[in-house]
Amino acid sequence: MSLKIADCLQCTYQHDRLVAGKCRPGDCCVQVESGRQIDRFFRSNPELAPEYRQHSFWEMRAIVARYLPQAQLIELMNDPDETVRRAVAYRLPEEFLPQMMHDEDREVRITVADRLEPHLLESLALDPDYMVRSYVAKRMPEGRLFRMILDADRQVRKIVAQRLPQVSLALMANDVESEVRRMVAERMDEETAIMMLDDTDWMVRFIAVQIVPLDALPRMLEDKESDIVELVKARLAAATQNSNS
Image 1 (tube, rainbow, N blue to C red):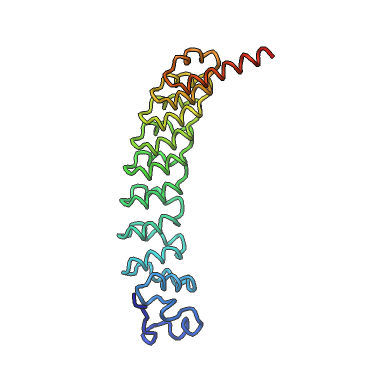
Image 2 (tube, helix red, strand yellow; image 1 turned 135 degrees about the vertical axis):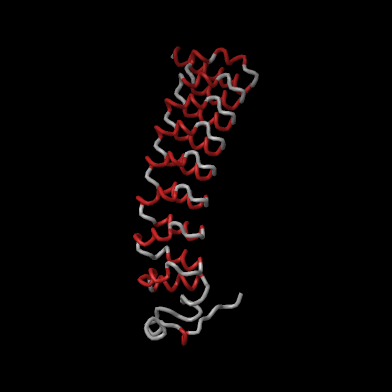
């Protein structure tokens, strides 16, 4: 790729910025369509960013969004280029973020979900993209996560299973994915875990056997998985030994 170099003799900055070392042809320049050179220019001259916020080159606007005063970012919220809008969403004052919640670009919505005030996140809980919903599940207040326990995506439900209040875990005991149910079983209290002893997945039952009260164990001696039976025997034997000591 050939190096892009502007003609400094045609540039309005030749007598001030160039002389002061705040721009350099081929390295730090705003007159060529080179993202690297443009970014270096605004690092040295951030006060000039507002003059370029409506520039026709999309990459210019995307870079300028990194240096604009926050108040002027509002003008670029509906920019036709998604890269520009992503840069805007990253720095936009929080009170304006709700206006970008339904942007057509998922990366914009992900950025919004990552920055939005937690109490406003429920509006994105039904976003069509699972990555957006994943960010929502990571940040939504725990007490409101119950609305996401039936999310269509396994990865989202795994996040929910990790964060859902313990008292609500039973709501996910019948999740269609055994991987999710295993995570649920691991976090249950001993009484609630009893409901997992009949799970179709042997690993779920194995986890539950480690948690449930001793009086729930005898029936598991008939389990078809030998590892579970051995664990049950070990727990019962340890309990007997402790009571006799």
